[in-house]
Length: 170
Image (cartoon, rainbow, N blue to C red):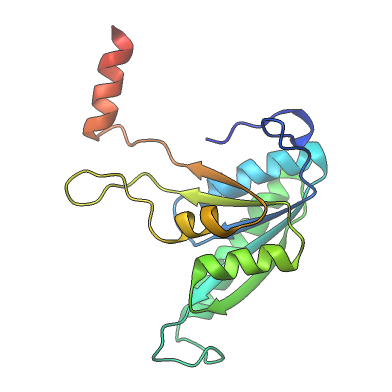
């Protein structure tokens, strides 16, 4: 999980005043919102949750993709509820775009965010290699502002977790 220093400073990067949280409705959304909410509470950071509906090339960008609006609203409503429990405000933004990573970077730049916070579930590809997907690498490579990644813990039932526990006992 993300570690944070007093007053919203992370390893000397300075105090963050506006954070864009990239939410996808997955298992790491609570980690992203919780980590950012704790940071916001300390440093009065403005939080903006962004959910992007990815629209493939068979649809027009303005077209409503069936079922997507309802799911997106649920994702953003859960984030708002979690932020309220931490006692911090959270603005929400719903976007439709061809590429999620590019939309997050563009939105963060448009609102003058000084940090983007993304979640990364622990998952592996067939063969056991760690998998980051497409969004996290894109944002890490292209965002002009700081990027914080909150990765979920390695599940206890994975081979890697078992190896680490064995090493820790030595």
